[in-house]
Length: 106
Length: 409
Image 1: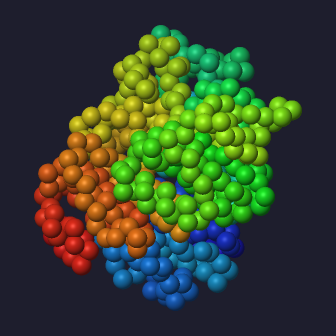
Image 2: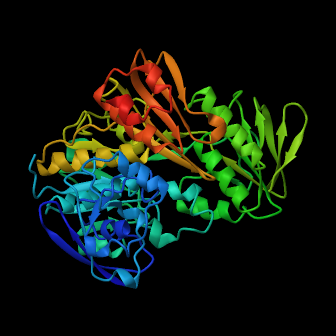
Image 3: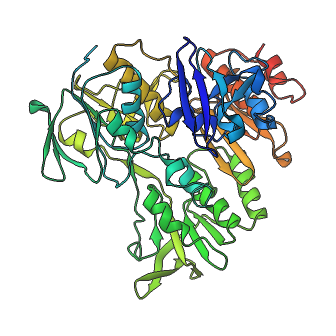
């Protein structure tokens, strides 16, 4: 279990206990947190679960696959700390993780 | 609009219905919501059923859109194992299969599709399966093991995804396709040929232009596929993937306009202003193509769920999306954006033999659709080009050494 803080683009915070093994995307979607659409359900096919990972967590959230990198390269409002949240698996190590949502996923 | 306390009744608890009720609460709708579904479980994702689920890489919890307690916690009255049997529009009432009735202020029809049955003798044998529900997938899974041979009738995406999963699990797979090539309804020949070759190289057998006479069995259980040329191809199970039919009868019987699906507008509203229809049961406008269509896809269902949630809560309508879809087979990710309506030319970017390429369907120098295999830049940029109707330099598009960003610049 890890506490993950999801911050909407308008500043609204959602602190969610996410089970280890789920992805950061699933933690949001299953708890109806707005701002992460995840249209493809985690297949890395749509880039609608885009988040910004707080710098402190950069090294713990793992590296991007070529597929993720490539999808993000063409998403809107991409920053160096952009990730697809369906590609970040939650573990106890990520307790306290903070992710922020972009203005729009489409 | 702004119907903050209206009773919303949702018929169908699939991807469309399940997404809609969650969005309504997310958007602050406080009125009563009732959702009825004919399956025993809550809304779940269907796409993994032909892939991760068969391979044991997904479980019921991971498939579920929301944990079951979500519905009660959010004052959503979810009733499983129930379907609607009649719609009485004059009384704003639906009759349900358990004999009860529900009154609505706003009704959303999200009843999905059902798989077509094989119109051949032997289709009723045990071991002849279709794949729509989690229960279907569970039954199919029991047949996908080493030493077993699964016959797949229909060379569409479901059939091909199951063939790939069967091979991953060590089962033999034969795909029977009535047309001369697989994916004949949905993809161009270059893509059909590529997927046929890719599957063949991984042990899948194809019977193309297949004339099936009947399914044969012993003791009520299917044992093979009898062809018109006299051969009988043995099978431990037969998966029928020959398309589906929208569950639109309840709407048609109530006098709503239907045309292979319930006809809706860009708010997903039917010809009755109190009734919406979303997902596979609907026949919807496609703004980028100036026509009506039933996309039969999860992304379309999600977009329509958003349209309805916005209409009910008085939010501005969402920007129309370019239709898209995807398919995972082996290590291939196919991403499709747009639909090839009115295309007059096909352009292949990259070499299919490399396993990384994209096919652009063009109308003049504008992109109508793109089919991208392991090629996210082509998919992502292609989708934008379809949306913005930009004129493209075709020589540059055909040259993979020119990046997609430069092509679109």
